[in-house]
Each structure stands twice: as C-alpha cells, then as structure tokens.
Amino acid sequence: MSFDDTTARRAAFPVDPAFVERWSSRALSGEAISDAELNTCFEAARWAPSGFNAQPVRFVYAHRETPEFDALLSLLNAKNQSWARRSAALVFVLSRTDFVFNGQTVEVGSHAFDAGAAWAAFAHQAHLLGLSARAIGGFDRAAAPAALGLTANFAVHVAVAVGRRGPLHDLPETFHAQEAPSARRPFETFVHEGRFRGEP
Ligand SMILES: Cc1cc2nc3c(=O)[nH]c(=O)nc-3n(C[C@H](O)[C@H](O)[C@H](O)COP(=O)(O)O)c2cc1C
Image (cartoon, helix red, strand yellow):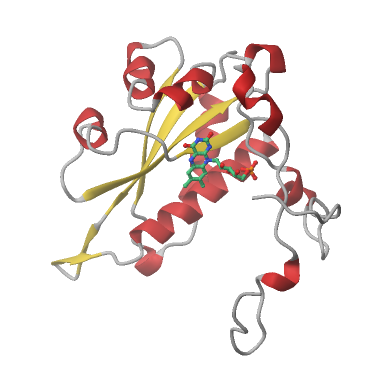
C-alpha cells in the first residue's frame, strides 16, 4: 500500500521513535545473531497481553547454518526463500487454540489476536537491538504443522526472518524497489470517535 502523503513516515502525534523507525527489511547480511539477542526478542513477546492471560503464543526457531534452518526455510514459498535464506534465524509464530481453565479445556477465541500482539512485541524488540524482523505469510500452510511437530490444537500464523541488515546487492533485484520503509494511511482515516464513519 502506498500513499502520496509525503509526511506518511512522520508521526501525526508524538510517539516513541521506535514505532516509526521500525521497518522490515528483506536485505539481510547472513551474519549470525546470538541466542542472547534472539532470546531478548522472545522475552519481549512473552510479556505481551493475551485474553484470559492464556498466553497462547509459541515459537519454533532455528539459527542459520543448521539443518533445522534448512527445514524451516524449505516451508517458505520460492520467492520468500530467495531473500530469507540470508536471515540469521527463522522463527515460526504459533498459537495454541485451546486452554485448560478450571479443569475444562476451552477454545481460546483470541489466540490469533494474541499471537499478533506477541509478534509485534518481538518485532519492536528486534528493532531496538538493531535487527530487522520481517513476517512471512507466504509458506506451505498444509505442510507446516507436521514439519513443525504440531498437534491439531496449534495454529501456524507466520514465519519471521530475523537478522542484521545487509547490502542491497546481495538481495535479488526483484525486491530492490521495495527495500525501503513503507507508508502509512493518514491518521484520520483509521480512528473514529464515537461511531465508525465508514471508509472514504
Ligand atoms: C501477516 C503478514 C504476512 C506477511 N507476509 C509476507 C511475505 O510473505 N513476504 C514478505 O516479503 N513480506 C511479508 N510481510 C511483510 C509485510 O509486507 C510488511 O510488514 C509490510 O509491508 C509493512 O512493512 P514494515 O513491516 O516495513 O512496516 C508480511 C507481514 C505480515 C504482518
């Protein structure tokens, strides 16, 4: 999505710069990141809010240059593999769809929403560490549950390519034009006081 508004990458109201400065790169260096860095991102996600405090989000990850990384990478579609192979780690974001509450197993209606909140915390923490984290919805959703070792009460939401930013010339040319922070819709088009006014 793009907007003509040249102020689109400027905050309409004061926010912590991290919210505006975070963006998801495809140009990654292939350098390793440490367990400490990755665990700091997971830790930020662990503190995300969730319905019933059920904390349904789970992560499966692998560092680059491991057999597990190759297995996770192979789940991505070819286009995403072509750039995500230079990520330092691949992370799959999952959620458990049920929850034991007062001895009863109940469905967690908010599991996907909660996973989104956790992913956002993860991505912002990655940014604060100087890393890029890009979500990837283009993967083999039929194959992923078995490949990740999941039972039927888990949902797979996205893969995330995490790493340090790298030079543009290592990124397949087809992505070069998009390798920049993206715009946002104008503030007044998404916040409604009192009642939804409809879309313009
Ligand atoms: C659910 C979801 C699925 C996405 N799928 C892909 C994908 O398959 N490939 C890709 O390169 N980027 C993917 N993205 C990244 C978005 O295109 C990106 O976050 C968006 O353009 C906003 O850019 P920003 O993260 O730099 O702010 C996905 C993001 C989300 C949240």
